Image 1 (cartoon, one colour):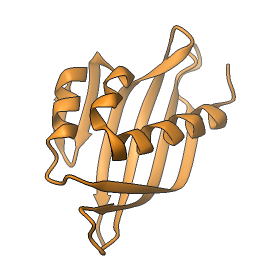
Image 2 (cartoon, helix red, strand yellow):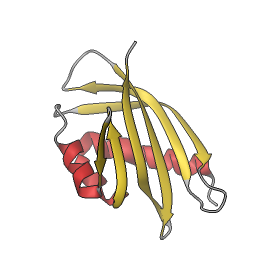
Image 3 (spheres, helix red, strand yellow):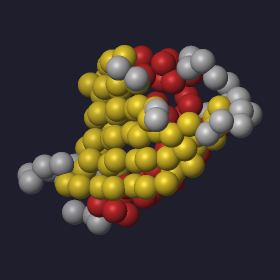
Image 4 (cartoon, one colour):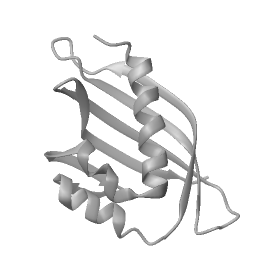
Length: 124
């Protein structure tokens, strides 16, 4: 199994800049059985997930990753769970929003896809 911390870092180093610059480019990371929960709304399937991400109520976003934690998700499959905390700015705003996001990554032909993705803004 690849070092899970290296996989998690490589994944987040790709995911957040892609999200910030071209959300549609994330479609290759999801499959039809993938599920996203975005602030309690559950969406299933790659095309539905990308539609949700493309139609979020902001045009511009900048993520700043603060922490990335990874754990093996299975004893028999080289899958992993990645928990990210960070900050984001939307539409050139000045108020920093805190977020947490969890991904379950599943191996697929030498790479990984997102099986589960849970996103939450953190208020308080």
